[in-house]
Structures are given as structure tokens and as C-alpha cells.
Length: 456
Ligand code: SF4
Image (tube, rainbow, N blue to C red; front, side, top):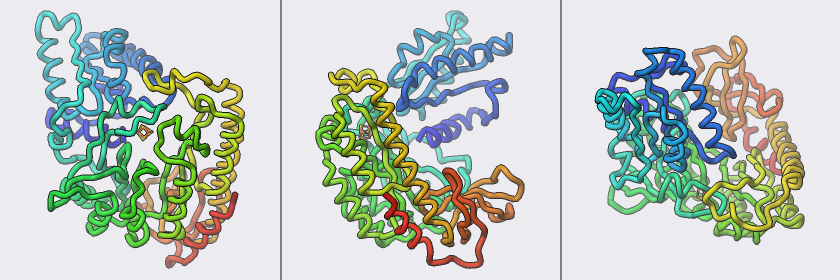
């Protein structure tokens, strides 16, 4: 979502004459668009700000005009602290206020021009404005290439006890269907063949349709699938609680909706899921997986896991291992629990010792890694549609993705860039596959995926 937001910030600043530049040394303005999810996020921002301060100083008198801004969730959560510890920062703004960037830039300019401004100028905008940010944004100016992001939903009302998102992105908000369709048309017109719908709780989407009634993500996907040029639709990140019948049905009958779902489960123990305030249990998660597979047999799953949540016992961790074995994941992201200041779990008793967390994570990652390898190996020999998205490291090579999100290195001419082409998968590499362009699409994709499920 930050990649998408950064592009929209560039759109907002374009009328002021700003264009993207490759390095901070050449920039009139640097915006650090930050994420608060990973550990020590704030410290990383301060260390990057220290580097930017040196860049600014090295430019001497010309550097005085350079603006430094901090955006995103760290700005939202640590705004006051940033202005205190880094007074050379000109603008600090949260993820819900970037449509106001031109106004903030103008305010810095005015303050600098005034006598008081010579000592520094700061703008802090970390409120959640009532007006909808998306209504204020201009149409996108930059093409995102063959695979594009499109934010359809933001914010979260779920308040998982380990997570900062509800505090930094605010309450759930869904954009109207018509606005999303219009943006998707523009993206397709600019060459996007795949659109990934974004939202912190993307399947909690409930935007107003043409008749004024709320529509779920399943209906939104159906509307987008009708757009000429849109060949692939994905969405992330979804919550098990919001995996409704309409979306599951869409997986069964919308061909453009890719057979790959990122569905975070976090833990395989009911007591831990309750302590996390996830709002579902293990059985419920497994039922959703079964329903998805019943709707589309070649569906592959990825997930997020947190090990060592406060109070997690050996038996509860084994529950996570058992769930992984039972489901079989094509990919996954797994982390040791680490407290986020201000979240309820940060102050829970029973914090798990670091060495135990590390040991559990190593075991889980070993299992997940084996599953991913097995999934990729089971795909070898199949001929599948691959969207070629970018050039590879080697001359004459393009890199794309299969319907199951596997990265594939393909020997292909540059004119194939941006196209969906049949590729025979020839070899499984660490974290990716190699393939060759084939004459026609085979029927092996579904077989490969269903074989991949039996790998635990
Ligand atoms: S549902 Fe996702 S974004 Fe919302 S609080 Fe839980 S982990 Fe965070």
C-alpha cells in the first residue's frame, strides 16, 4: 500500500512541478514514506533522517531549500517525537492526509519566507480528516506497468491486540465502486493487465454501488473483470472473518480472479487466536480453506504467522505446526512476536523468551520452506499463463508471475513485456522457477497446484 500511496503523492505534487528523481542528492524534496509494521520501524526512520541531514548539509547553501518530509504510519504514530528529535524535518504527515501535500508545501514555503522561518519550518498533519482523501486526489498520472496496485479499502476496525494499524490508518473506509472502476479503466488503458486490490482488510470492502447499496468484494471483482484489458485480479490482505459467500463464489466463476489467496491465520491455537482478538478459531479457518478449495480446486494459499505471542505454550505452538501441515501453504510470512508500543499485547504478562521464539520460528520456517519448495517442484512440467512484468538480470530474460504468484524467469524477447504468455515451467529454483515460452497453454496448471497441496 505504501508503494501505491507514494505514487499518489507524486500525482498530488505533479501540478506543483515536482517530478520523480532517482537519488536524494538530486532532490528538491525527499519524502520518507514509512511503515510501522516491522520491528524498530521508528529507529530505522531516525537513522535514515540522519543520512538525509548529511545530504542536505553537503549541498551547502543550495541545501537550505531542500525539503524533508516523513509520511506514513511511523509519521502518524510518532509525529511529535519526529518533530522533537529531528527539527530539520519540514513536514510530518500521516497516511490519511497526503492529498493535502500541496497546501503543506505552500505553508513551509510561506514560513521559510518569513523572518521566523529562518529558524526552521514545520508542518505536522496527523489527524484523520473527515473529507475522504480519495475524493480529493487527482487522477493518476504515472503508469504502474503491467501489474498495478489499486487501493479499494483502508483502515481497520478489528483491533488485533498485536497490531498498530487501527491506530495509524484509522477506521475502515471503502471507496465507491464507480471510482474504483474508473481508476481500473485508466490503469488498463495505461498498460496494466493485472490489478491487485489493496486494503488493510480488503475483503471487508463494502463500497457503495451504482444503486447506492453497499457491495462486497466479490461483486467489485465481477465489475472489474468486465473491463477490457484487465486479465488478472488479485487482492490483499484479507481477513478470515470477512471471507464471505460472495467472494468465495467469485473464486469459482470469475476467471480473471487468480487462484491464489493470502489469508493470514497467525496461530493454530484457539486460545492464542482469542488473545490476539482475531475473532475466529482454528476450525473456522479450516472450513474457509475447504470452501475456497471446493469453489476452485487449484487455489493456493499463503498466510502470515506470529510465533511466541505472549503466553504461547509448547502445545499451542505445536497447534500452529499441525495447522500448517493440514493446510499446506504455497508461500508464507512468519515472524517472532515483538511488542508494538501502545498495543494491548505489548503489556501482557507471559512474554515468551527470545531464544524460545527463535527456536519455534526456525522450526516453522523450515516446514513452510519445504512446503513452498514442494509446491514449486510440483509445478515443473506444467504450461501456465505468465504475465511478464519486467526485465530479468540476464540479457534476453524477462521475469513474470504465474497465477499462483510464483516468480518465473523466462527467456523471452522484450516485445513480450506486459503480455500474458504460455510458459512451460522447466526448473524450480530457490524462491522462483525457470521456464520457456510455449506454443499453447497446457492443462497442467491445475494438476500442478493440486499436486502441490499434498506436500505436508
Ligand atoms: S485485522 Fe489486520 S490490520 Fe486490522 S488489527 Fe488485525 S492485523 Fe491489524
